Image 1 (cartoon, rainbow, N blue to C red):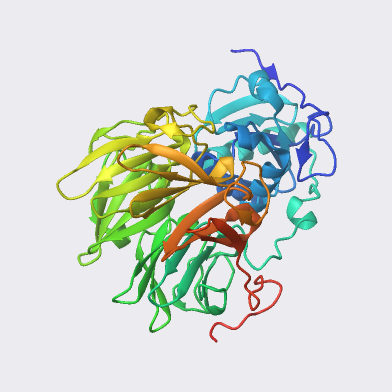
Image 2 (tube, rainbow, N blue to C red; image 1 turned 120 degrees about the vertical axis):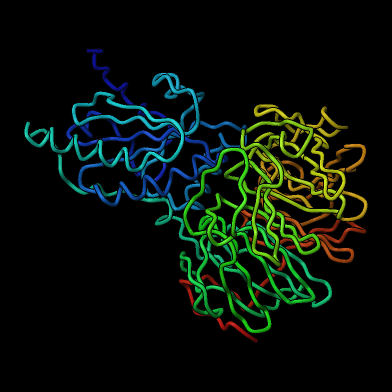
Amino acid sequence: MAPRVRAPELPQNFTWLNTDRPLSLKELKGRIVILDFWTYCCINCLHVIPELKYLEQKYKDILTVIGVHSAKFDNEQEVENIRQAILRYDIEHPVIVDRNFEIWQQYAVRAWPTLVIIDPDSYCVSTASGEGHRDTLDELISQMIQANQEKGSLNFQEFSLNLEKQKHPLTTPLAFPGKVLADGEENRLFIADTGHHRIVISTLEGEVLHIIGNGKSGLTDGNFTEAQFFAPQGMALDEEQQLLYIADTENHTLRQVDLKNQQVKTIAGTGEKGHYINSHTGQALETALNSPWDLEKVGNNLYIAMAGLHQIWELELETGVIRTYAGTGGEGCVDGSLSNAAFAQPSGMTSDRRELYIADSEISSIRAVGLADLEEVRTVCGSGELFGFGDIDGIGSEVRLQHCLGVRYIPDYLWIADTYNHKIKRIDPHTGHCQTMLGDGVAGHQDGQGKNTRFFEPSGLSAVSFHLFIADTNNHVIRRVELDTFKVTTIEFPNLCAPDVCIPKTTI
């Protein structure tokens, strides 16, 4: 029998969030503890959060979960950015900021996410890497409770915490808007109000026209006031049919909004998270999806940045057939044929109708995926490596981005939301030449002109005429850029408020 290993004590002098004081394993003796080693960029880490939330609620009087945030990207090392991630993903357990991977090394962790299970005697009893361990952990916790109850060594009591969302409630009119879509023909702006689980429709000047969704997370079809979403992200518009398509990310579904009749329906996904190896083809409503993050409509097909599967998918709107379009499902950067290519958490998508352009966030690169006769994948710029990030303008592989989430084609350039560098950049899709256009690289909220402006993790872009619209996610606002002068202003929405603050009208 292998010797039992006592869990190393947690540092008391590190920064702790979601609690008003550091926690120690000594004081938690008699309780079951799960350490969740995570980094907030990682889609697999985000998938673990609801699994842990289920266990936390089921065993709230005996289980303590502690998030150990071991940052991958430089930007993720900043305490305020981690706090914003805790608010964005509604994390309700203590989080310790793992400075320089010290706790990671003490526990011999090798990958994100990793869960370490500690028994009531403060010994490590199990480790699980990756996602999808909820049922296994549920059984293990039940067994530990039974075994330790007989010894009388359990410390049953509900643990009270001082949560970040209690100290910093999300009362802003928008909350972590992830994507934005501008419609110049009808003077409309569609905003994925991700943190409020709804879609806001306004004029391009900020006058609110409609609100789709009641602001509560859920998966409910129906009219605008009945419908529910769960952290919606990317959108695509069919102007002729007046249909809006939405990547309902945390519901793992695609939704269709009939803008004329004000009705919402689910058109793809089952509401469960799907797992596929290599490729899949099936009926859309019978196929489980995995964190669809952005959409692009080309012809009668809807293309999907399937972040959770590291693939690009395709939905035939006429037949309802959905299939893998590009990517093996392995996380990485592999150019070549559609079937052999590899992506790493694709999170933004646009098109010039010859190619799809992808913000491939975990490798901080921009990729191009051929349509029609091209059917090849190439890297436009960026290192193509999981740890090849930074902030360097240049050409092709010498370019360094940091977890880019947004991309928009405006002839003849790609505009990029270089999210973790807090900048907006412009790229020539043919030469790969990349140039910073907006933002000085410091997280903040500052209107102005060109590089004399500041953003805070911008994630989505859209454009009409001579204006670029930016979902400035951690600032909870939409910014407008005059492309002839590069003047940046913040759009005001005077008739909009948070769902819990007031009940706004759904129509003007």
